[in-house]
Image (cartoon, rainbow, N blue to C red; front, side, top):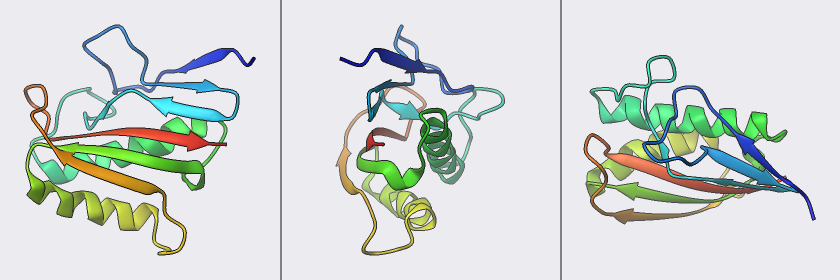
Amino acid sequence: MAKRQVLHVKGSNHQNPIPTAVKIGNMVYTSAIIGSDPETGQMPESVEKEVANLFHYMREIMELAGGTTDDIAHLSVSLTDREYKKMVNVEWLKMFPKEDDRPARHSTVQKLRDGLRVQIEMTAVL
């Protein structure tokens, strides 16, 4: 069986002792990715920037794993407000412009830790 490879991404840190992502064989799984600033680790003031950072981290994780965003199979999106789905859709369409070539996605509205408005979990197959 393949050994777990931990993937660390600058700026995307957790409060708990967990990695941003792991790769096992041809599979990539993330913990909850947050949209903190890649340089400072601080949460941006605007939800638009928070969501843009989330998609930046997905690209970076896939590159570290040896793949591309074309390998993403599923996203779980957690939002504190249903309206934020509009901002997610803007970045979604930039990353996945082809209607017939998009991963599956599920969104839920729920309470997130203080300061977060959106977080994403990702599964990819390389």
